[in-house]
Length: 179
Length: 179
DNA sequence: AAATGTTTACCTCTAATAGAGATATGTTTT
DNA sequence: AAAACATATCTCTATTAGAGGTAAACATTT
Image 1 (tube, helix red, strand yellow):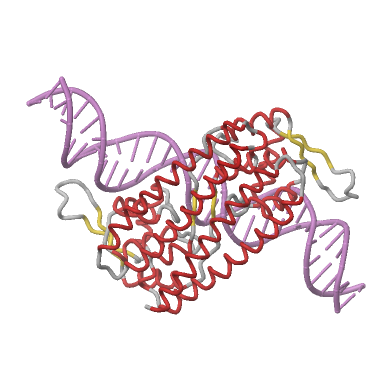
Image 2 (spheres, rainbow over the protein chains, first blue to last red):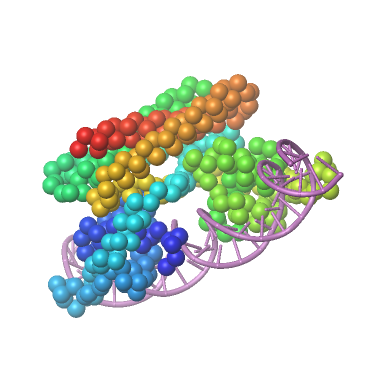
């Protein structure tokens, strides 16, 4: 596991919240960090194994699972140290790949109808994201947890930027409809 | 070159605007699409060669370059067809990897000073992006080009979401300073 | 005019990773 | 009891980010 790989850090981060299985981590990512950090599922299991090999986490079979294998991973003090050192380092530049915007950038070559359809799909999806954020927000404001201010802050980033994107898309749709 | 690879589409898109060298394309990406679509430089040259091999582009040495090799690529009708078909297809889900937000999400484990420092760096960088966008905006509103409405629209997306991110960061900084 | 640094231009390689698929068990529905 | 679905783990390949390397052209200093 080289320095460059960042999959281990989100795993260690999730394990620092609570001991989890690979599947749990996958689900947590989907329901909490996915809009600013996604991880391909196939990465989780090999990276968990590497974390154990490097002493960053331990693994034990879940006693509650009958005969079904369910491995629960727990972060070690060494794992916490590695995580915290990374958290304090200056964040790397972010990476975005937004195919919708790329297609809009080159849209001179496609029909007005297709452009409007792309914009309408984008609006529908951003609205769905916003709804999902608001639901999480309602749940989050009720809990008591030392992580709460940080989870709220990152959620609010999603809400703020999604609202801005939605407004932009609605304006842009009107502009293109008129032209 | 499989269906999955998307590097060829941004290359074909750039070539559909004007014939360019690999270096030109790299620079164009950096100065126009980078905030919603970046490409690793090392991808450009091999993908250009594949485009020529598949009849999507042609290549000729630039006569203006003295003895220095400078290869100018031009899109073919087949390349235009491939590009337009892709542009009309429903855009794939976008991908984001924002290390700053990931670190904020797990920030319970780091000192308040480090969190404030991360936020301040973020604010500085977003302000710089916004300045760069406004400069491009000033240039863009003066030109006459059939691409103009699409370039302006995608630029406005960057301006709108960056402003929202900046406001969010300034609010969040105040909240954390008080707590 | 020589030395130095910077920009332009092209190219290679490796480690990381997205995305798709494979497998198998438990749970719910028909 | 068969079918459909959800949980859980894991493998593989094509793509790709990031870093490195080469060398000519041009600008700046000495």
